[in-house]
Amino acid sequence: MRKEEQQRLLSILRHGWENDESHDAGGIVRCPVSDFTCPDLLAREQRTFFRETPMLMGLSSDLPEPNSYWVDNASGISILMVRDSEGEFRAFGNVCRHRGAQVVPEGRGSATQFSCPFHAWTYSNHGNLIAINRERKFGTICKEDHSLVELPCQEKYGMLWVKPSPGGTVDVASCLGGLEDDMENLDLANKSHGATQVIPAAANWKLAIDTFGENYHFDVLHRDSLAPEIRGNLQTHDIFGLNYRMVFARKNLLEAFQTVSNPEELPFRFITLSVYFIYPNTIFLADQYAVDILRIFPAENSTNKSNTFHSWYVYDDAKHYFEEGPHSYEERFVGFNSVIVNEDYFVASQSQNGAESELYSHVVFGRNEPALHHYHNAHRMGLGRDQLELETA
Ligand code: FES
Ligand SMILES: [Fe+2]
Image (cartoon, rainbow, N blue to C red; front, side, top):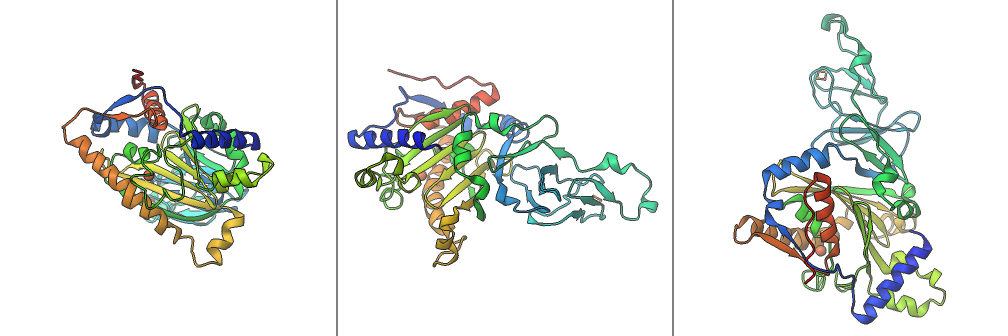
């Protein structure tokens, strides 16, 4: 994010804090609970969002050098991502062209070629089938016609994006819809991968995303965890195509205004938490130490189960805190999960039970929850569904 934009947002937060105001969506919307329980809707979401739509997978440091690879099964399709010998980012369906076994196990590493565990067909990290085990006995096939299936992908602004079905192209700039400046200025290409975890939740994948969609709940649900650090009921509001950005104020924001005479010197990342929704399924957080990427998917083809694939990427000037201090990269998850798992996803599972109770037909998103209006309408737009109606009365 550019300095001028940072200053614009900081003055909105300062004004909001001093006047007890936050962005007003202009009305409420009602969202049917069937959005969280309907198996037919889930099937449409699976096809549209997790097969046909380009997705943010991670950052350049997930593939740190030539011949690095990373296998990701989060979407339900096994995807093999590589930085090939020439340093180019490529993605393939990780599915053997012999009889469909998963060629490379889930995980990360370095390799120039991959051998399938079923009958040892071998592929290069350019996706070419380079050897058929006992080829004379197997029979003759054209190897060029049996490469791994290449998936459209692009690396840009330090981000890795993949569309999990063949055909077409990925244009990261158009996926970002105006967030390019923010991403470019975060210098994502130079953030190191810290650690990765998977967080299951007994809640629809959209309910898991919704827990990141407002800070109305901070002073209540997070009164002992986040509320001492971050001001509740205060956010900025900006829409970038299907994406969304809100910035929260840390409790040291007003003090920073008092101690800095030149607004250009306000230490943005130390006095804010930026929360981005990146369509279709990613929450992207930027705070003082790190960038967190949370990719949220339905689990087990179920309307009431989700998995959050969470990776975090550390700033160079914060590495010493985790590498030399008392904290390891993985230990950061302990604090993070005490909020996300024990508080947010705990109530998300209750919201799921509520949606399944058949006691009521809809939930309500308030004027002070503008991101929820946007998330749900972005998903509805993606599926060609009617938008949720704003009730201004
Ligand atoms: S399925 Fe991969 S070698 Fe047979
Ligand atoms: Fe929360």
